Length: 115
Image: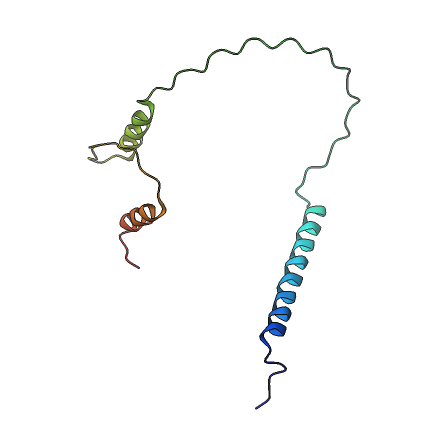
């Protein structure tokens, strides 16, 4: 059997990292090349001479933001359930606390799978 060139983990790490970054740099150059010779890109039209701009008109006073209807989310959810069809019935709509573990548990429950 032949002996490995080195058993020093630092040298092996440097060699591996060099290879990884060389490949990444090569991929970035290939992507830039594809963007330069992209045949589907629209050709840039020469820009016409810009016309002198007039002084901007004073901005009208912005109207107050419209009030958000709290029942809007309920209406959207009800419309989605109705569009899905079937005999589905909305029992309750509660705000959800957003934590990672709960979301993963819900996703697993929806998929009905166990890891």
